[in-house]
Amino acid sequence: MVLDPSSRWYAEVEFQGKSSGFDTPKCALRHLLRKVPGGLLYVRSYYRQQRVLGTAVLFVVGSDVLGPMGADLIPVEPELEPKFRTEHRGERSYALDQLTLPLVESI
Image 1 (cartoon, rainbow, N blue to C red):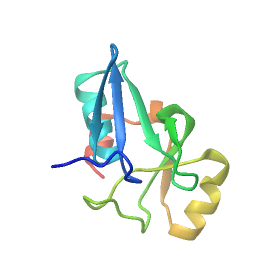
Image 2: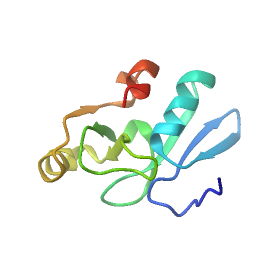
Image 3: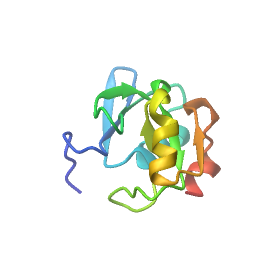
Image 4: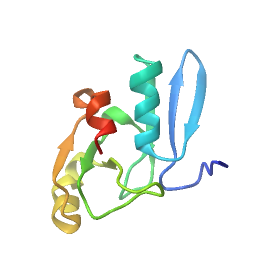
């Protein structure tokens, strides 16, 4: 699969100076949690479409917003999370440190 770094869904995991790109936040989170604990996650924030650290957003699940692979974790700016959950019927929100591999894989 060809990755488009300008895609609104593009995410990266950085570890020991190396960066790996992913087509969705969910795919990047799987990699981070399986293979590179301690790595840094970068995602595009939903509203501002800025590259930010995963620790700077909340990940909303259960909304009507689908990624290119279907259901995904939507990275939303914390101050805009209530707006997103109302507009897109988001069910739950998680900080990066609350996400586990079983939770990510269940989405």
